[in-house]
Image 1 (tube, rainbow, N blue to C red):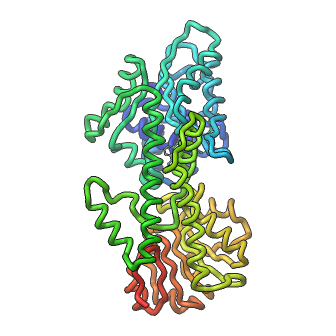
Image 2: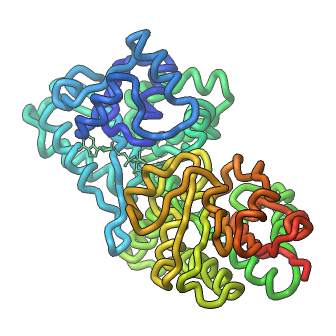
Image 3: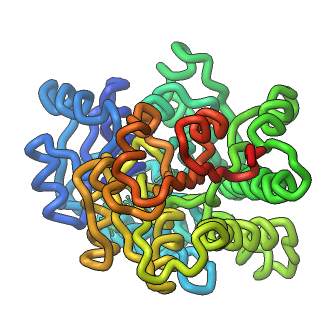
Length: 439
Ligand SMILES: NC(=O)c1ccc[n+]([C@@H]2O[C@H](COP(=O)([O-])OP(=O)(O)OC[C@H]3O[C@@H](n4cnc5c(N)ncnc54)[C@H](O)[C@@H]3O)[C@@H](O)[C@H]2O)c1
């Protein structure tokens, strides 16, 4: 199948590369010429485990190309995937300008029947609007196209695996021909991985994506509130979480107390859902509470540090981990941004290290913080060490060495990576999130 994927970010690039690997003929298009030039040389602009190898294999066997010529590539393809960004505006509404501009472009360019598939996460009703924009821009009103909503559920850090072995593929469309084409594209997944297939209309498909992300964000805020209670009543949230998660009706995923959710999806999608609810006259109380709890959780992390250290002015806080989660370089809405900025505002000095996200972090903090080459340089003469992202390499850290380097032997484990007793036995004061602490 000849497919054009528009947008080569985390979703578009992974989708393009994986669809090529499934045997399709793919061209990935982006307006960012620099990105496309790099991709043509096999250089991927994001960190995503396993992606580079599949990309290079499929470029070699000519199933995968890169281009900036949107017009020509739309004309040459049968199926067009839209995978451009849909960030939040300051009022919480989704910014659909990139999606709308691509839709107008598609309308102007198409010269024969096409299936237009939206993969970007968008408010309910957007696919129908995209279809209208395409129709309004058609040069030849006799040319037909079918609109499909095909939301993406991959997770950064395991995106290739998630795309290749998804729990489900959701396809929203009212057109049998388009549904058949979509099934053909994903066919090998249904045959080889037992992936479920959910066929529905445009609006339901769009709502599945928003509802799924809002629900996962709700789980995170819920366990974070439980962690606050645990601290007040002497319970251990890690064990509470395990005890809850073993119930199949609840499940263990997204039940980890920490500094709050971040990333490019949960914050924007839950605020987008709440905005949508408001627009149609519904007061979505849970969504509002989830966002409020998440905002407070990040500030609570700073208060935890202050409660032990006192005034942080002039103190050096060592931060380990900056990306919003491990195995990605994505810093969008990472809890580290709020926590570090809050500490800076209060006069603290920050030293930081992240195994992969340093370049992205430098774009955000520039010279406001000191970037170090490794965890031990961060610890050198710091008043405390704060774990903010649960990278595996931090689990292997040599605490004896850290102890010698730190000015004060304080460990703030904001991801609950370590067993409190073990760290305390090594001679540190330990602060986790919702953990039982030995005095
Ligand atoms: N990142 C994730 O984990 C994830 C997971 C599921 C769904 N999504 C959704 O997928 C969509 C894309 O997310 P992302 O993280 O890949 O975004 P991204 O910001 O990483 O990438 C978007 C890409 O689109 C390109 N672009 C913007 N306007 C364009 C245009 N007019 N023509 C061609 N290219 C254009 C940009 O240059 C950029 O390369 C969003 O709606 C997001 O919510 C993201």
